[in-house]
Structures are given as C-alpha cells and as structure tokens.
Image (cartoon, rainbow, N blue to C red; front, side):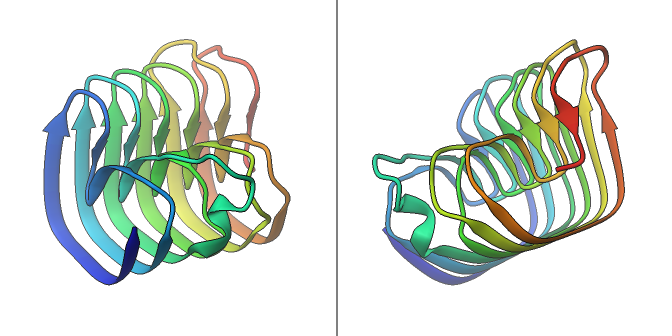
Length: 174
C-alpha cells in the first residue's frame, strides 16, 4: 500500500468494527502526509480511528514508512476498544499533530494518537493539544499518545489533555 498527500474534510462514518475516516483496515507500505479535519467516527465494535481503524503488521520495521499525520476538530467514538485519534491499532514513525479531539471507547486501548501501538519503530515529533480520552466503562490502557505502547517515543509535546478512566487501570498522559 502506497498512500500520500491525502486531505480528509467533514467526514462522518458509522459502523461496527474497522471503522475510520479513510481506511478501515490496511497493510504495510508507505503512508505519508495525511491531513484530516472534522472527522466523526461512531462504532459499535473494535478498531476505530480518525484515519485508519487497523494497520496490519508483521515485522518490527512496519511503522518506518508511516509519517506525517494531522487530525483536528474530530470525534472518534466506539462502544468497544482499540480506539485512536489517528489509528485504533497500528503504528507510525514521525510527525503527528492532534488537536481538539475526543477519543471515547467502552473498553480498553484508547489513545490520542493510537489505541494500541504494536511493536514497531521509534515514534517522534508528536504534538497533542486539547484532547479528551474517555472510557465509558472500567477499561484499561488509556493514554494521551497511546493506550498501549511497545515503542520508544521522542519529542512529544502535550498540552491541555483530559484522560477519564472511569475506574480502569494503566492510565497516563503518554
């Protein structure tokens, strides 16, 4: 999969699982330079994201060619888990900007950028501003950047975030 220079604007998408503003499920390749604004995702299942629901991975270097994302003024909600501002389950390497976003789920693995970031490369240059991550049940693994993270993070800027765990465990701003 080679995807670049995509602009998403005023998108509303509802469904059960693998629900996203751009692609519900994608495979490795070069993915770069995606801008999304006013994305409204509503899901009753797992793997929901503002841009991608699920990014399939089979190698540690998978995230190396996934860069340059911006998502603003959006709501990504699910009654289940694996929910992220950019991707529900997956990874990216560099340059993510997330601003004025609500990520809400009814289970575990909820993150401002990625709900569950798999074993990939170092993620760098992440800017998050005015973010709410909210769990409507007692789910675990909630974070401002990722709900669950395997990877090193570099140059992370976080301002104005609100993480609401509703009694779950493993909750933090990163």
